[in-house]
Length: 441
Image 1 (cartoon, helix red, strand yellow):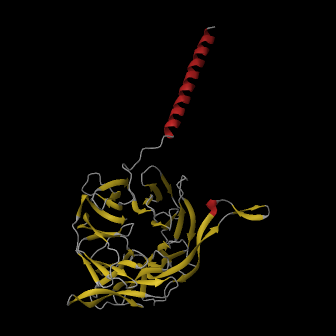
Image 2 (cartoon, rainbow, N blue to C red; image 1 turned 180 degrees about the vertical axis):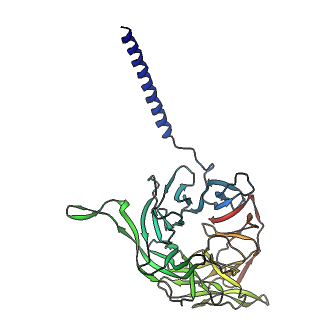
Image 3 (cartoon, rainbow, N blue to C red; image 1 turned 120 degrees about the horizontal axis):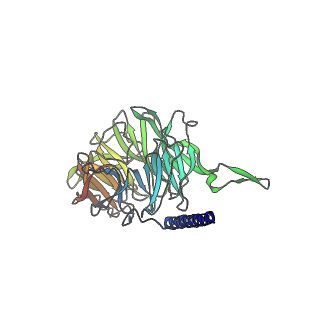
């Protein structure tokens, strides 16, 4: 009898214990279903400049991704240890790299997805494709990989891999960029020497297409296995230009109408770097040139567009003209800076040294060009706003970014005005000085 009572008490205790565990599991599950609080409070607007930066003066050494409001100079720390942030085309998401992972987070910080591509270790995120569904990255061996992003999925998915060694032996891919209509891709095909960098870089154009990688037989017909098995690939691969081998071609950028590509030609013999534009079919090559013109009853250095390859300036042989970006299909922003050729000559989206001026040029030459004067000494980065209406210049001292200058880009003017000159505006001081390694707007 006594044993029966003890067994009944034990059974009751065990039942209560099981009920307690069940309740705790249900509570934990219900709590896990509650959406997490936003990481970014308040959420980002999509108008901020993203920075990979550090705050060396802070005891926390806050290396990672920051957001800066260019109008107020206020900076916010977002993601520890993140690097190379990129806004998506519609500014809804941020893609970035963290160690050997590629991640995408929304601008409110409510959700985040990631992927560790098979061949990505020590690789580099390049950015978004032509929409908010595609990401591009470069492997350590300079091959090109694609990732698909779907906000309804829990992770990024690999979507193809491109190796051009069959077409260009011992060459690799750099600076890939997809046309805005998603039909073409242009990239640098180059050879690489450790300790020296890129050599023999030429621009290559190819068509982008979807290739079904997995099939099943249904009713006697081949059918794709799933949407996840559609990879991206390239075809009809060819050189964009026919320039001699002694010229290096870098930094391709599509015009908004997908008809032209801006790029730079580095002349090793001439020791210069000059912006050019070319049509999609390889015709219509034009170069930008500094020359001496008569303006306001005196001689001044002006800029013009010249047919064919431009290999030297008429003035300032030690200056270079670099592509910042297209403002429209007929207007382009060009940076004039002091020429410095080194193994990082292709790193166009990072820090800008020796900046002299920024030119806005109408490639049809039916409107005057615009000259934004700069200090030319301590430039840290140069970016065009998403709406193409503003230009921001970051400046500072040593390794620190301390202020930004915000220029309003004017609309096209009357042809009777040959030249518009804008002095440096008042600086906007940063709320915290930062050491900046990367910027994206």
